[in-house]
Amino acid sequence: MDSLDQIGSQWRLVVLHDLQDGEKRFNELKRSTDASSRTLSRVLDDLQNVDLVSRRIEEDAPIATYYRLTGKGEALCPVFDEIEAWADEWLDGDPRP
Image (cartoon, rainbow, N blue to C red; front, side, top):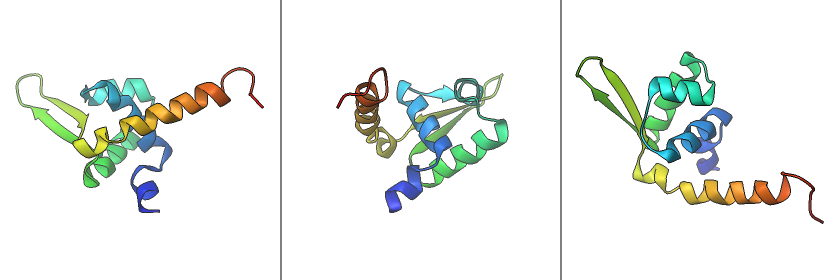
């Protein structure tokens, strides 16, 4: 499926989910996801290439790079909410019959 090709890797999902909270700097994403710099750079490039994430560079000292979800990326937020609700019901605590 094309949709899974765009969002399907573990790191892509982690970064997309993390950006639900709003715009973040590269180092903030690195800390919150525990991804290596190389992995995070690759994932962010991939997500930009499929228009799920946008990048903004602030030129003032210190120079900073910010990432945020695009409209296309924000459209995934309800999907993440549903996955979290499913996990809360079926994966946390005792499984229900």
